[in-house]
Image 1 (cartoon, rainbow, N blue to C red):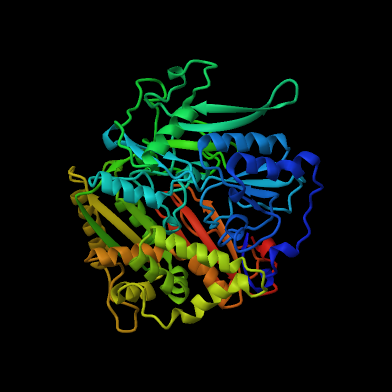
Image 2: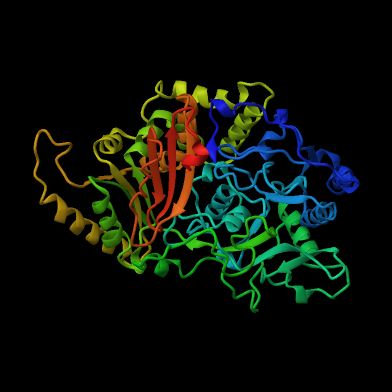
Amino acid sequence: CSCDSPDASKPQQDTPLPWQLTEPQKELPSKLSKIVGREHVLDGTRQTSKTSAFLKGTRLGRGAALCIVQPGSLREAVDCLKAIVDADCVVIPQGANTGLTGGSVPRNNTPDTRPPTILSLKRLTTHFPIDDGQRVLCLAGCGISTLATSISTWFPDRESHSILGSTFLNPTTAAGIAFGSGGVYLRKGPARTDRALYCKVSRNKFGENEITVVNTLGVEGLEDSDFVEHSGEDAIGALDVYAKDVQQGYRRVMAKSSDSKFGNAKSSDSDYQNKVCENTGEVSRYNADTSGEDCNRSEGKVLILATVHDTFPAPTKKRVFWVSFPDMETTLKFRREVCLNDPKDLPISCEYLDRDSVDIIDRSGRILTYMIRFLGMGDLMGYLWRVKCMIEGMPFSWAPLICDKTLHVLNNWVPEAIPSKFMKAGREWDHHAMVAVGDFGDGSLDCFMERLDAFVKSYNEKAVAKEDEVGNKIISVVEAESEAEVTALNAFRFVAATAFKVFCVGEDLQGVSVDYALPKNGGRSPPLTDSAAEPIKRMRYSHFGCNVVHEDLAYALGVDTRSEK
C-alpha cells in the first residue's frame, strides 16, 4: 500500500460506511460491553484521537470497524470472539498495531460486506519464565521489547526469542507468530512456535458457529488432561488465575514443560541455522510457510491467546561492524563466504542498507534515531508514539501529516544521529552491511573474524588508490567501539521504514512499500519494467542473511502508485 501523502490526508470519517447492519450486529457493542465493561468497548465507525491507534496503521492501512473491544482476560477474549462470530462480523485480532505493514487494521474496500470488529489483545500483557528460564510463556498482548527487558532482568545470561525492526514500537509476541516476523537474528530465526493456546472457528452440521480452543502449550498443570471434562475448569481459567497472580506480585513455583508431545514440541525454529546457509534457489523464509501448528503465520485466521518461546544464551562478547562495498556482487559474495559460510558460527545479525536508505534515514530519521538512543525501546517510547497516533487521528485536515512534517523540518537542526566515521562510509560507498558477531564460548567469534579478515584482505590488497576515486579501499570496515555506538547503529537501521514515511510527507511525495523474499543464492534488485515510472528514490534495506527485502519507492504526486506497485 502507499504511504500517506498529501493526497491521503482526508479524515477517515468522511467515507460512508459500506454496511447494512442486522439486528444482532447492532446489538453487538452492547453485548461486548457486558463481557468486558463499557470502558473497554469503543465506537470504531469514526476515527478519533482515541480510536485512531486501532483503525489506522502508523505507516500503512486504515479503515472503520463496527466497534473495538479490549478483553482483560483470556476468558473474556474467548467470550468476545464467540459474540462477534455469532453476530456474523469479521474478526480482526490485533496486538500493538504498529501498522508498519498494515496487517491488522480494517480495510473497507473489500468484497466482504460484513462489518469488521477489532478484537484488541493489548491488555493481555502477562509473561513469565518456565523451565528455569529456558523458555517463557507470554499472553498475546506481551510486547517483545517488554519481554526482552524482563528476560535480561530475570536471567542476565539469557536473551528473548526475537527482535524486530519495529521493536521500538513494542509489537506483540503473538503478532510475531501470526505474521512470521523476525529476520534480524540469524542464530534464532523468525518467530515460530508449536506450543500455543489459540481459538479456531468452524461450523457444525447445523450451520452453527463453534469456537474450538486448541491447547498445545505443553506446560504442567495446563494440559487439557489435567482437567476433568465438564467440570467447568480448563486451561484458560487456570492460566487466567496464574496471570492474575503474576500481575499482583505473588510468587509461585516456576512452571515446567510437561513430558508430553506438546511439552517436547518446538518453541523456536531450531533448524533455521542450517536452512539459511543452504546456497540454493529456494527462499529461507516466507509468509505463506504455514508448517507446524495453525498459529504459525495464521494472519488472523485463528485467535492466538498465549504462546511459549525459547530463550537463548547471551554472548559473552560482542563486536559490531559497518562493512561497505562498491557493488552488489561483492556484497553478495561477502554474504555467502563470510556470513553464511558455516551454520555453527553464524553472526548474530547481518542487516543490509543501500545508499538511498542511508540518505533517507539521515535526511528524515535523525530525531527518531536519537529518541531510541536516549529513551530506549520501552514504555516511554511507546507512550510518545501513541501520542503521535492520537494527534494524527484528530478531526482536522492537517492532522494526519503534521507530526511527520514537523519531524522532517526539524531533522537537519540536530546533528547526524550516528558517528561521522559511519556516515562517511555511508556516503562514499553504495552498499552496506551492519554485522553483529558474538562469542558464545565455542570459538565462533574467532572463526568469523578469520573469514572476515581474509575476505577484506583479498579485495583491499588489489585496490589501486587514486586521488579522483571515492575512498581508497574496495571494502571499508568500521567497528563500533562502544555500547553507545552499537545502540546508535541499531536505532539508525530500525527507523528506516518510519523515516521513509517522514521523508515522503516532508518532500510532498508518494511512497510505495513492498516486502519480498529473494532466493538464498540471489539478492540483486528486481528490475523495473520499461513502462514503469522512474522513482525519485528507491530505498532497499533487508535482513541480509535470509534475503528478505524491504523496498520503499518514492514517486512524484500524480503517479499511479497502485499500478507501480
